[in-house]
Structures are given as C-alpha cells and as structure tokens.
Amino acid sequence: MEYVTSPLPAAVLWDMDGTIVDTEPLWMGAEEALVRRHGGTWTHADSLALVGSDLLEAAAYIRDAGTIPMTPEQIVEHMLGEVLTGVRQGVTWQPGVYELLTELRTLGVPQALVTMSYRSLTEAVVSQLPGGLFGSVVTGDEVTNGKPHPEPYLTAARELGVDPAGCVVVEDSPRGAAAGLAAGALVLSVPNAVAAVPEPGLVVIDSLDGVRAADLLALFEESRLDPV
Image (cartoon, rainbow, N blue to C red; front, side, top):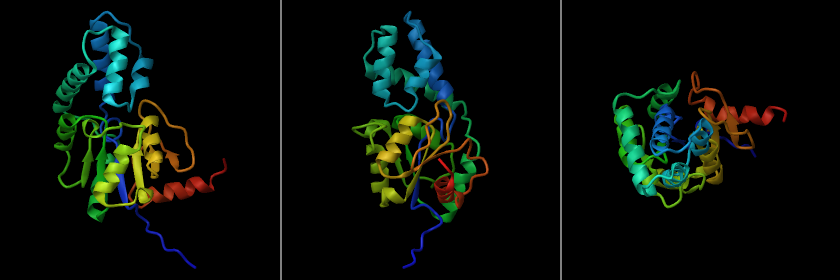
C-alpha cells in the first residue's frame, strides 16, 4: 500500500520571544537591572537559565536572587512593563521569520502563536505583523501549565482543530522544544540564547533565513538520513 503525505505541515506553531522577535535582550536587561537595584548579584548564566520559562517561575527565581521585596506577580508585572516599553519602540524580527510567516499564510497553512509572554505583550508584537497570520494565540497567563509542559502547544493544536502529530513547532529554547515534543509535534529549533540538543523529532538549524514552507517537513526527513 502506498501512503501519500502532504509536503506541508498540518499547522505551524510558533514560539515568540527569541523565535519570531529578538526580545531576549530586553528580558535579560530588565532582569539584571531589577536584581542589581535591590543589591543582588546577577550573571548572564542566570538570564540563560530563565530563557523559555513560565514567567511566574522566572519571577520567583529573580526574587530570590535579589532578595526583592515583591511578589512573583509584581515582578512579572514590572518585567512585562519594561519589555513592553522596548517592544513599542520597535522590534527586531529574526532572520527569515517574516517571509516564512507570510508564505504559510498565503498557502493556507494554519498557524498559532504559543508564548509564555502574557497577552498584553503578545498583542503589542502581533500588532506589528500583518493581520490574519495566527488562527490561535496562546499566552502564558492563559494556561495552567507553562513550558516545558505540553499544555500550551496542545491548546493551540486543539484551537486550530489539528492533530499535534502533524504540526511543526518552531522554538528557540530547550524548554520550548521539550514542550513541543511532549505535545507530540515535530520541533524545529532555531537557537537564540540557549541551544537545544537534536534528538528524534527535533531538528536544530542555525537560522530560518532561506527556509520555505516546503522545507519544513523535508528537514526532518533529512535528519533521519543523517548518521548519528
């Protein structure tokens, strides 16, 4: 029996920070400034440890590092305000992202935005993109379990009405990649601050520059042919 497979994913599920837009420097700068303001010590390694984290979990880490007299919720609100200010001044799109997003829309491939950032920041980024790109937007303040739990990606697939197994998740962080794999999707990792390690179902590439819709599933086929 011959099986016919589509050359395109059932849907593409995108992370935002570090994947679509280069907001990681904004987050890292805000983290360090807050901790140092309260007399704490903060290193680049601390910032890297939080990439892709649930914001409340990250806030608890920040509070402890700086002995900050704020609740995690207050720290999240402060951090979001700092990053939102930077985003409103303009964002830097990651290479190749804008072209791939718009090509997938033209081809009719459903897309979702799945981010641990909260709705207010997410909307500020989405407002700077062409309309109609995302059929679902899942944010960190609207799920019970953040990445690396699969809930965010499972939620997006359900809202799009697709099987996660037919989806490609695009991520930049190991936590996000783990969430995509746990949801049963294929994961294309494009490292920004912290790199994921390739494994079955997870392909790591340097950049999306030049990557087209028809390449997405082909990248996973190529990985199966490469010697381990």
